[in-house]
Length: 119
Image (cartoon, rainbow, N blue to C red; front, side, top):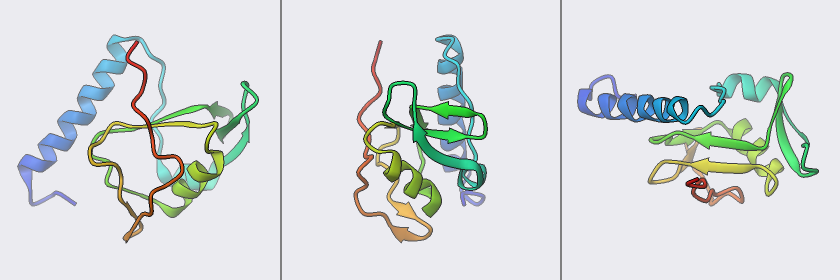
């Protein structure tokens, strides 16, 4: 997408790297997700708190973080996030928020995120 735009590619890569380093520094356990795997293996279940959560393989998630510069999402990902709303916390760290789904403009989803907690 940004192969011909070195400054933009660096900006995206640096932001993602900085996110991972911040998670590591705070000793926060995390998994990196792939939309293809999420589409094939993801399903909405009742989580430990009794609210909707996202199960991918053998792991269940009640929080999802979309990294900075996430511009689009697959239809299957959007559908799962919508289905798991409002129990699933989706924190989108980008500004602007993801606006496209397989190349169509995305209507304002129900899961439109709030900022993650600061402490």
